[in-house]
Length: 234
Length: 234
DNA sequence: AAGCAAAAAAGTGTCGACAATTTAAATTTG
DNA sequence: CAAATTTAAATTGTCGACACTTTTTTGCTT
Image (cartoon, rainbow over all chains, first blue to last red; front, side, top):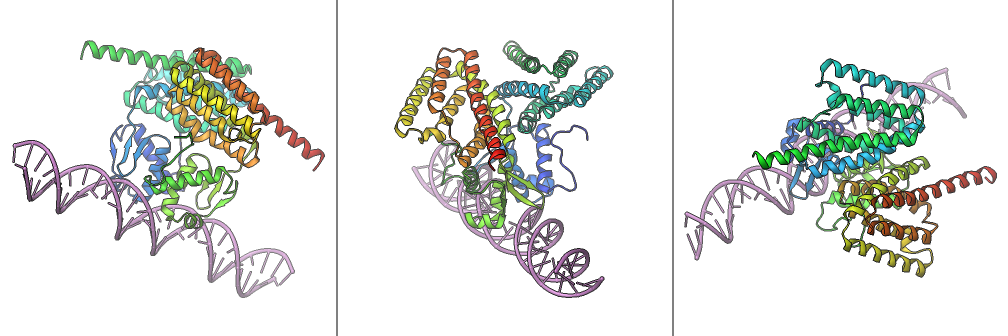
């Protein structure tokens, strides 16, 4: 199976689960606008399910912080705030480092080889589309996802894949800010794999943290520029 | 308000939220046995709510990994595994360090003073009850909770308070394994506050991580001994 | 008596409806 | 005409009921 995130079987799975997946996707991709209010009857009609079924899905979305509910007032899609994005990157840095450290200890040689292969594919993908490739949008998550699997820490995977990545993906989709430095990122990924292969947990940890920190700082820079532009131009 | 975890207003809040809170508490305290199967009609009756309401709560419990659901087969309370506990400590170490680092940067002087005061109360509590105090059971979480609040990273607080702490508390309740070294722990807490007060983020991070690592190793030792005992005695 | 088959019981998945609350609209009043 | 109050519409909270699966019980066959 392609490393799709939060994949849910379309036929077997309970309706609630499918609705949950669809809603999550719609929110992340901005099809349901960030900050917009959610009407339960309307959404239920749109997806062709009962309100009860939909509400169960909403409960889970709330637990993942993708929507915010206030009693008797209904639910709103989270509104993206810069601060929260930075918070997320901070956590991702700490957990990414841990995951990578554990991966260096626990990944099998086969897994590492596959990881290498994945990066080769990414490189090809970048060369072909020259910037607008799948890699730009989602490919990076593939890499991190595999490393996490190699960490053998299931809860870690759940926290990152089930919560943090979603938020970051949401930003990328809605602000169209794919990684602005694909080759550099790829290089960093390769270095990380090297460290994992050498079973150098300490180094793997450090490199991964630095990798994520770089991404965060890039976001911070862009934000500063946006603010500056706003003050001079608009 | 006392630093109760996941506090839910008993009157105002929607029924679902209250049921969720009650169920979570019951699971953590072992009132609903770990590993036991959950009967929706039975539970609904017990708490005097409809099945729909209860199912919404179950969805959230599943999202928090406190129960596991399989389609058409129902829900089971998680069974406590040693591996998962260790996984949780690993994550807690990474995130605790981050939280402490941020706290050193962001906590106000007032908050730090209050933190100091809390530790004084803890010391008193330990002296009085000499081991069986509130501190042993829950007090440690108070400390970590406050530090997390000081980190100003809300998501971090949610992850730890809304997920990881719960699991650790569950183990403590059910295996009655309160911190076996209250004075040592208190001392470590004091050192951490010192570092925060000096705004030494690096050191605060390091000390917190070491503090949590010590707890983890203690768990690991106890587990090894238990295994050894089992092999020779049982 | 053991094993398989069919029927019954229990349980989960999903839905539609009613009650209570909030928001919007309409009417009254100063 | 604006502000306040009442009325109406829409929305959320909660429940009970029915269909479909899974599990258990029952009964038959070898």
